[in-house]
Amino acid sequence: MVLFDLSLSGSEKIKEDNQSDWHYLCYRCKSHIASYRDIFNIPGKGSTHYLRNTFGLNFHVITFINCQNLLNVSSPFEEYSWFLPYSWIVTNCRYCQDHLGWRFVHEKSQPAEFFGLIQDKLIIDYRE
Ligand SMILES: [Zn+2]
Image (cartoon, rainbow, N blue to C red; front, side, top):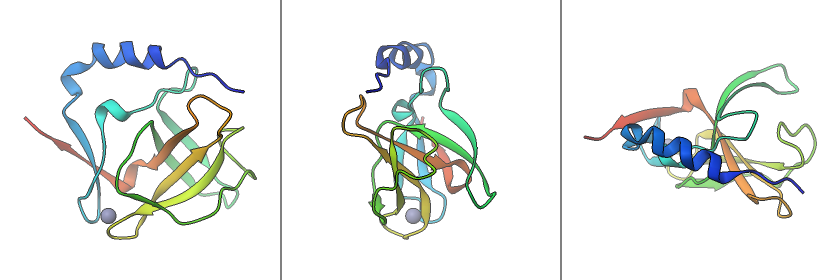
């Protein structure tokens, strides 16, 4: 069982409240995917991650606790997970079907799920 201290990311969110109007959109179809307040800081690891998969491809991944307009397009896989004990599920944009990242799930952990999205597949929308 993994326990994440969500209160830590909460205090950081208050500190950076001036950025709370950032929204992350799908780079291709501009669908709303997440808000700045949805960013998830994994304790000791932060919210931005430079990761490499088994094919040698590098990804700059941002972790979110909550996302919208994503579609699961695979079964959960435990093998090669970047965030054990979480399994990963390939997630695409619901509207344009492009691959945006992965959903990480482990029902005995807290949180039971979070999302890792590829930074290059997102654009930031600043709303005044
Ligand atoms: Zn899209």
